[in-house]
Amino acid sequence: MKIVVVGGTGLIGSKLVTKLGEHGHEAVAASPNTGVNTLTGEGLAEALAGAQVVIDVSNSPSFEAAAVLEFFETSTRNLLAAEAEAGVGHHVALSVVGTERMPENGYFRAKIAQEQLIEKSSIPFSIVHATQFFEFVRGIADEATVEGKVHVAPVLFQPIAGDEVAQAVGRVSVGSPLNGRVEIAGPEQFRMDEFFRDALASWGDPREVVTDAHARYFGSELGERTLVPGDGATLGQIRYRDWPGRNAAGR
Image 1 (cartoon, rainbow, N blue to C red):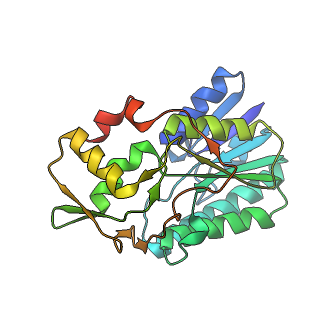
Image 2: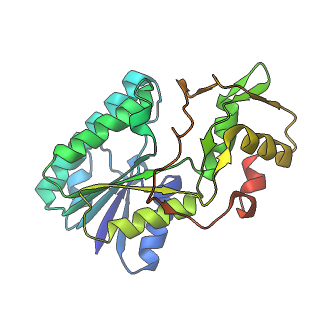
Image 3: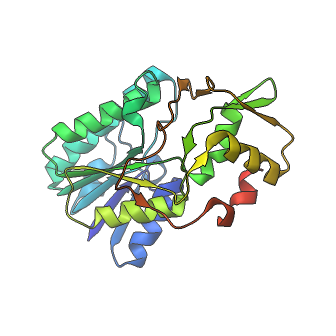
């Protein structure tokens, strides 16, 4: 099966291309690095020729509210139009658990807009909502740092390894379209402040973690379950403490 992975040279995309290839599929990495630009349409028709499935794991180069909205709307419209022309039978998109619970956040508004375009298109689809990746833990801590202290809310947090995100997305992509959503998350729930206190200690990071009920997560105030999935989510098996990249994440 020919499967085109948009964003196929990034963190999750490169893992997907490898995993799909190992299972005998023709996995094509589509990104500006490979001559495919979903914003301009350059290379799209050629990349999608003969494809049965398209997986979109691309991301905006800017998280500024207007820029990220423009990216996801333009990219998704161009991609869906090219898929219709090519006769693609399944569109798979990676999104974020809790997107609909943070409408004041510009990035999540853009992801909602992306999902709405997918739902309204003629292409059968599956949307995978994932929790935060282990690989992004350091970036979350850095974003939460104010005057040298990491301010984190005492809410639930259930991160997942990037390898298991790729595995789950790949599994969905070779199945029948869901025409709906599935949630994936790591095997363990933590209190977010306690998780980051332990993580920074394991890295030898001297920053103090401050428990702050009103701490902002990329601009949004969190509720108890904003970042965790509902019942029925698919759970990974890799625990954060066993993840091979745990120490590297602190560098």
